[in-house]
Length: 351
Image 1 (spheres, helix red, strand yellow):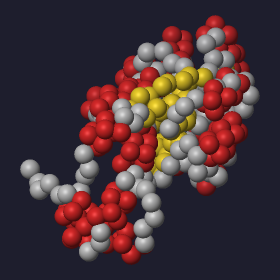
Image 2: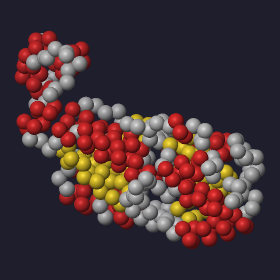
Image 3: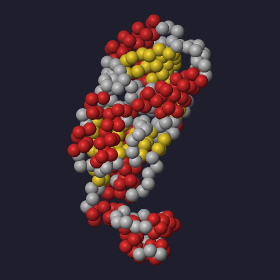
Image 4: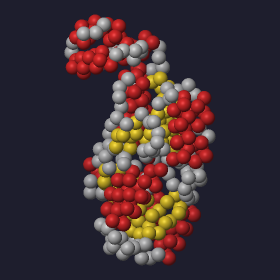
């Protein structure tokens, strides 16, 4: 066990008063920059960590965080991310941290907008926001700025916000890598397909737009001369989607390679497996449904972004910012993992 340091000890080592040390440790009152630097130097040297459980219980301070993520069913991408959120909440239970999870329809922008007034009226100390709808997120963050409520962004980084931190991949680079993976499977003049699911409100979510931008830029740099077809599908309408895919594949027999920039690659893999059509498909996210079609060869690559880790770290970041008073790195990019059927069994995404 390391030595226990009292405020008096830190004051003597820093050459300042005990009152100055107390103000710095508890982030209250004014101190000179010189005194602050002296105390922080000593704190770093002794690796000082306050007894936060005792402090939070003594102050009877409760921390109420709110998360905004899409609705999900078990096994989907957002289910994985919320597993990380739940684990972080469990670990921080002793510090009086409570996380309230709010959900919106990822295919309907208005469902996100309807939550904004509820968050404004809530008594919360921090918010975690899945940034699917760019304009709506900006509207919410501007209101949180006025209320002086800190917030964390996940899924895709949005500029011109005052977020404490962002956890997720670099969406542009992820799409750029996807472009390389696809380009290596085709000839420069082959035609390809981009599959999309139609949404109400903003036509594409922030992350998908950035991924597609990176994807198209890679192909452009390689002087790709084929045609890119856009195939519009509908959320949760499998019969209609099957008809759309059938019509597209029958009228574009030359197209046998494509990509979808979200976690619904398994819906396409299922169709191609059932029809027996040879199609090379790249998708996103390591969820069980996608893994099945990666292993069967109906998805050639999955690009993953460790959602459990994102969910866990975003709650921890708010805790560090609000309770520990630590400086949190603003941009925290997750690794861009590339999975194929030969290495998927070894993939470890545990927190």
